[in-house]
Image: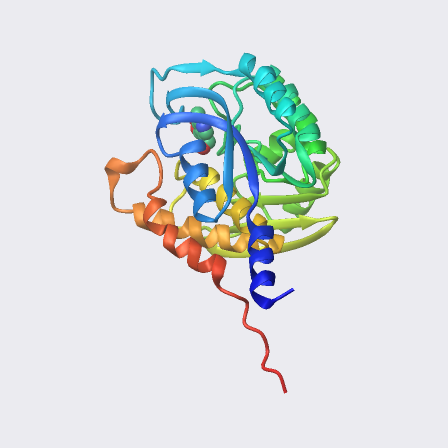
Length: 297
Ligand code: PXL
């Protein structure tokens, strides 16, 4: 193989086909309108399965429309199966109904290539509260999706609901360890837990891999910015599928999300999401930055 052929082979291996399943909120910078551009910027072919179509997201807008696409899912999946379509990764987010969770579980179990990386962002709660359309029946259904995931990507609120642990605003490392131990009992060996902060001006991400815990702490700029969970999950998925190890992908996604929040600060009209688009070149830069190697003797 010539070195040029080898380079081309490596490039082809890096080009991944991802399926992401989440809603289209027409306005509000979340879900698919965030995942598509971020994954594309990471160099991934991105296929979508919209779970629902909403006029806006549900966090702060009132009177939003909601079209549930649950009943379209089996026919879409059947067509893909007939065409022999398979994915290198499947990443799920905000879903449209409890019934849909069962369909999505089947897609996770049957539509991936053998090496498929399955990432589940529970995407149903924040600040200790469920998002408006969800209830405990949905949470119970989401528990059944956890064993189908290679990586579960909850925030603290979602982790508490799933694990049946009391939500706390202030906590210590033992609380987080206990939370992860309970959550892993649902059948997920790798968990990326976001929004973990042990002091008011800091937050961070905990990566749990088969009982081993690593923590990346960074600045907390503002509390509870809308859409940052989807920005984080999309950047994490793009970095991971681009070949970064899990902890490195978790750090890149955190640094990118901080930049997006910084970009948006000082613009009170932009309360509904973050300006992630203008920070995409920084994300691309982080993805192409090789870890510094020690000099050879
Ligand atoms: O960012 C999570 C999210 C996604 N989709 C919809 C939402 C929310 C958060 O509230 O309402 C429709």
